[in-house]
Image 1 (tube, helix red, strand yellow):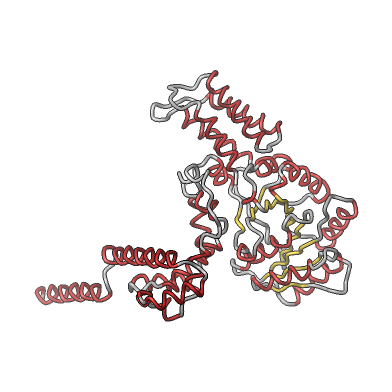
Image 2 (cartoon, helix red, strand yellow):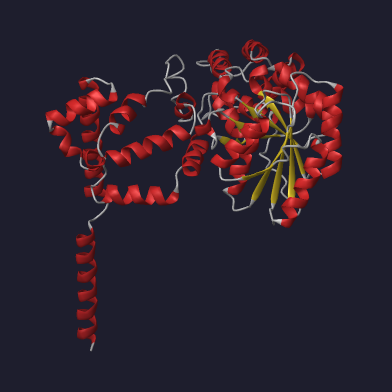
Length: 459
């Protein structure tokens, strides 16, 4: 995501490195390169010109302190402008109403149905009961798709298989939600391959019938400037409340994210990454300042931590933490951790959130299937072997695991060696950072005895 733009902006900002002060000449040169980078990233030319004119005006008028280099000051100004361009502040969805009703609109193929399930999962995690509604009565298997992914996230799907009137289905679903005490209703509507009058009229009729508290327009970020044009057409008819950018992990340019806010004057509220079932957790609120960080190669450690916290199940995390404290971390725990990492989304995007890492890995291919050999080997072990890795010293066990997994002996030996190193590191951390239970108890008893002695002396 944003790889091309990040690289181009980095090159543009290098022109100021080593210079002692900001001048009209060096700023003009840098700003020209920034404008080219934005246009190449599929940002509308007028928007690119406006933002770079603002950067130039602020840079020339800004006083530079001795402690700040000109290049650092310009990075700060560019960051401010990018943040403002994308909306300034993060905005969440409006969930007022009994029930709150969210209408999902967009073209076919933009990822509406998958996003609807992701949003349901996101709201459900906040402790609200959610009902998904299948109003796409045209696309083959659309209802079955929503039912399938709804089941995976544990959310009921309201559907009327014999009814071909989406307006009526939407109205009936609200009554059903009230009767069964659902707090939020998410209505997934039909899309078309292109904008047409019939489609626009239908979605308008649904909106009038259910009066949603929130209308979200879902758009495929990979379509670039076309996404912006489509958003404007929908907004003119629907006056939606916010934008959702899907498949952002597949777009290295990012022009849609930078342009869409200015064109429709409505905030980007969510970004979605990944269409696979294991990516159903990969929905994120859109934070303009954090996205500006990533565009400028500064990373986004806050989002990375939040993503990890969101994916990790509390009870499982506590169990593994206890295993580590007891020096009993095993291959079954290791496998569980791999599954949590995979659910966080694209590996390269995830690693690039770490400040300073993005530039280092921009030319490195990171395969999302990197865990496949490890998973195959662990899955070929017996539960006893996974829980007691020391058993893997047995040659016959190793031979059986290799044959069952289809991997090589070298890969198995490498896994055993690496896992052994992980356990050693964890053991050292336990020894230096936290006292054992018996040691802690001994310290507590000593303190208690000292207090008793003091009280005895006073008497």
